[in-house]
Image (spheres, helix red, strand yellow):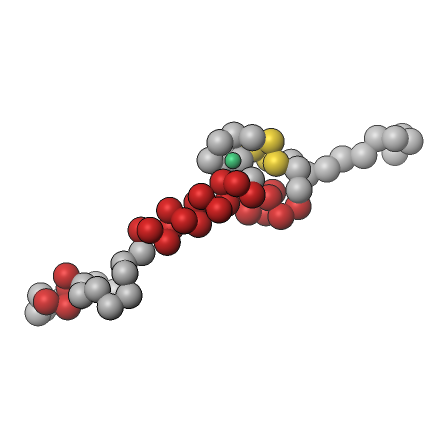
Length: 64
Ligand SMILES: [Zn+2]
């Protein structure tokens, strides 16, 4: 190994394509801005607690 040369893990953000170099970001696949946005989008996609699921109203087979 030559002096002054080192390697870091890096990857592109899955959302915006920015180069990620921090360990957390590389593991996550998103930069910190995009991780927050992705998390928000994920939460927005979840059903609201207390909301009646459509499947609750339909008797019959349910796929789990
Ligand atoms: Zn990003």
